[in-house]
Length: 117
Picture 1: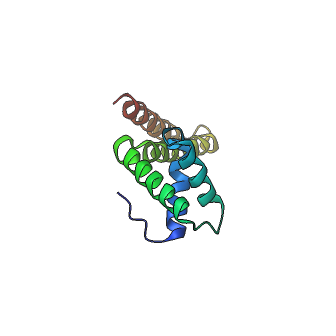
Picture 2 (picture 1 turned 90 degrees about the vertical axis):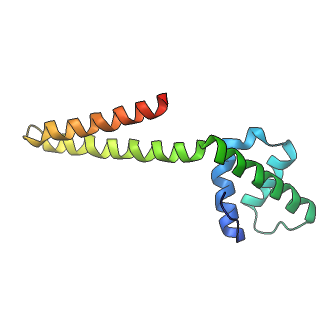
Picture 3 (picture 1 turned 45 degrees about the vertical axis):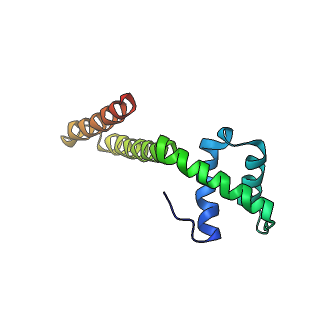
């Protein structure tokens, strides 16, 4: 589990997790976390308690489900695939085109295999 040592770090992590786990929180937790992530000055005890509970729930969800982590990994792989395809286009019909096509195919196959498991 990630340690939430400072407010800026906490806001960053909560804003990353919220899109994935918002619907698993209570309406009050959703509202409070959104307020906290978007506002600079939220400090009442009830808001703090709601944020702390929501933070714990979302980090627990992420440690079990890894949705955010998997999304970021998939996004990175797709970016790399896109870059490779752009490179292939710029190479036109040179000898190295087949090698680049094979790299992209392996990347896509790895992504598919990861999604199947």
